[in-house]
Image 1: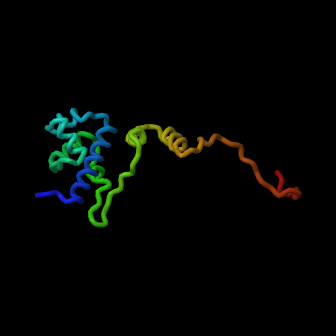
Image 2: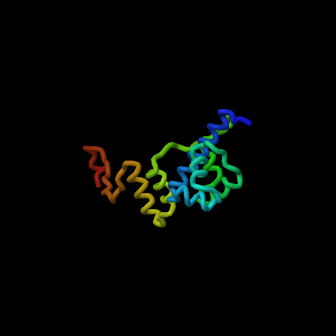
Image 3: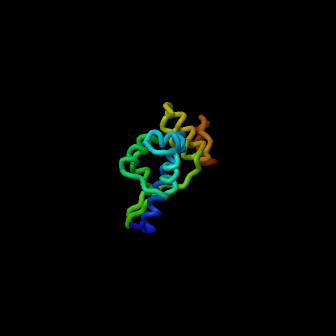
Length: 139
């Protein structure tokens, strides 16, 4: 039975997501293949969308690369339902994967501010505002 273009597109999106999460987790195609019982060439075919991955292998893949099944289906549209997976660089994906592992909430907040482009606020002196010319308003 021939695969439709929609099936090919879905397999390619699934393969791209597998590749992204595999790279984030620092696992090679060979290591993933060994973990799920296939060759690295077969992993390459899954990641390129040339071959369809079975549900059992997909579950083993998700477990090995440390993500949930919903994340692997991100970007695959069926009718009106599509899970979005934004196109980010490997470095950005690694940062996001490691961010929640930072124990200190202060460090996470400082990193978030740095990434947002705002320097962390230091204890700035507070100035009172008063109307000029009204002595009662001055301290």
